[in-house]
Each structure stands twice: as structure tokens, then as C-alpha cells.
Length: 189
Image 1: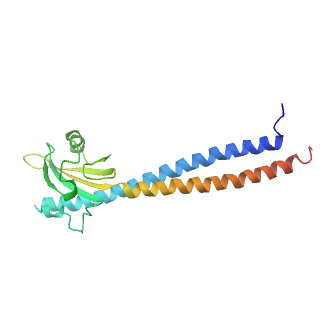
Image 2: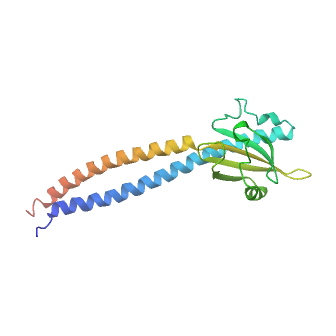
């Protein structure tokens, strides 16, 4: 049985350690980037909800209608729901049914609540924000949503870049480890 040369064992050990470090760094960067993108979507949803809340306060339901200014019907949508989940007003793309369940509305009754889910009539997963509107005679809820398609595409591109450049970095440091191990072992030989 032939033993693996010490130089190769050192290089493989170094490469394994670098692989673990690069993988952990990639996971951390991916998680951080995903959280930042989701936070940006949540801020946009809060802004949209405030405009709709102001419109509902003025008894102006036209704010929800997809008119190209506030709601882009392909990527953003809104509904006003009663506490029983009945649709009071809705943008066109999601008019087929409430975007959230009654249980979600109970959660939102305590304060604005965010959900990541699927919505009938929308191809991509969505991020929703439900905001209660306390009123005499029963609460209403403004539910605004945005697709996560762009966020998911950005995360997929990041994953690809991390994989490509991570492998390239691993190859470079492995060659460096091979050269360094050779230089360190030269006096022993």
C-alpha cells in the first residue's frame, strides 16, 4: 500500500479548511443579502400601506385600483378586507379571493404583520403586510403585497457568483498551499 505524500496531505488539509471557511462565508453573505432585500421589500410595503390607509381614511377606494402610479399589477397588489376576511376592495390581479386567512387577520389585529406565502393569481411567492384599521362597527385591514420574484432572482445570481468565485478562490489558494508546503518541506527532503 502506497502512502499519500506529506505535501499532498498538507495541501488537501489546507484546501478542506478553506472550503469550509468559504462555504461558511457564502452562507453568511447569502443570509445577510436575503435579509436586506426582504427588509427593503417590507419598507416599500409599509410605504404603500400608508398611502392606502390615507385613501381609506378619506373614503377614497380608488387608491387601490391598478392605475400605474401606486400599484404595478404584475408585481404589487393590495386589498382591503373586513375582519371576517371578506374583500371590501382589491386590485385586479388578486380579486379572486382574500390574500390572507382569518387567522392571519387575527395576528394582524394586534399590529402590522408580515407574511411570506403564495397568493392565488400570482405566479411567484409574495411578501404581504397586513395593517389593521380600527373603526366603529368592526375593523378593516389593508393588505399590501409584492412578488418575491426579483428578490429570488437576485439571490440566485448571488449564489451563482459565490459558487464560481468561491471555486476560483479555492483553486488559487490550493495552488498556493501546494507551493507553500513544497517550500516548507524542501529542507526536510
